[in-house]
Length: 483
Figure 1 (cartoon, helix red, strand yellow):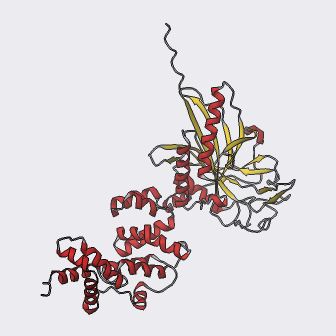
Figure 2 (tube, helix red, strand yellow; figure 1 turned 180 degrees about the vertical axis):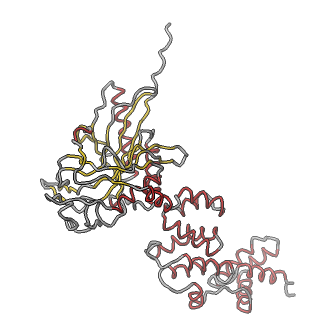
Figure 3 (spheres, helix red, strand yellow; figure 1 turned 120 degrees about the vertical axis):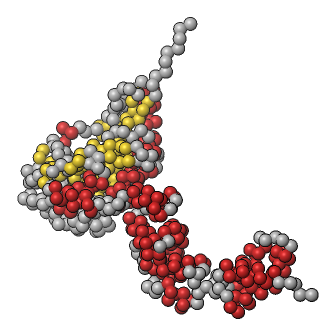
């Protein structure tokens, strides 16, 4: 009996991502036109971005600076003299008949994205380019074109095909977005199209060359990237299992049907007839400009989380919540510094502040709450001037108005009661109204005291000091019962 043949090596995914990120500039890449999401169609245009004959482009220095910053934030090597090229293709949303990009000499080579598990995924390049317009295909026979987006500055970040699963691709995108947002390069708002992704995916057997690459175009959410990869890897695996060939092509994800479908055969670089743009000189970077930008880079989110955990005693969960946005991270740092209470600041910003903002229909940036006012509120609670329930009431006012916490406490009569006749009266009333709890406590059930404390807190509207209530009730219940 002949021995069984060894099993064939398993198929291994090779996934590379091309991420298009809209830079946080006010104007377009080569003209002074403003770019703004939601503007009326074809109102933010000029002869340059419309491709009128004789109109000459002038590079946006802020876009160059932000591309430089992205390269530094991701550890890339900067080209001191990069250049622009023309990428030729015909489509209705490209008025010039070519896209200005950087093919031969991108502004950044190399770099990497470090995944949450510590693995580094290398970048091949980061280059500047202009966006195309937007084609809107009606259900009938018409296509409308909005050229407001034509000429908007982008960077394209191209990874090596080193990702090996849909979940890893999503983690890469989430990490990359965080790096770019915290570096101030872009808002990376996928709903507004300022972060878009093309995926290159293939299957090969371990130890063999990479398989035929399929491109998935214009994926505009992390979930769509993950779902499209799950489907496409299964589709390619099924083809290979049947002995069929995977075609090199561009496919589109249909989220409603949960499948990819073919758009066109995949173009190669020679199909675009790249040539150096004769209207644009080389982009020359000085070492002084590079070092100035390096020095101005904000602290990355991952570094902030590690520092907060090591120096401030925050847990990993709270550190993750508080580093969701640069604005929230900065707010936490300042309120923690002013209050001298980082853990209390973290608790308020992770729990009570979001609840107050939701109730008011506001974002943190749009609210009237400031780090100084939150720190003052925390100080009132720590000094037993204000109970936690009353402090939440004050917080609800702080997100909408300009009064200080102390002024609100005085105006609303929320100051915590820590003694005196009023507290004594609340405690005596609770004892008289809760005979069962009193009997249980005197019988040795210490937990029964909680019901009495709750009754006092309810009667006081949360103004009574829990510690003072506990002490007063214990004193009253320890006194001899009347004969």
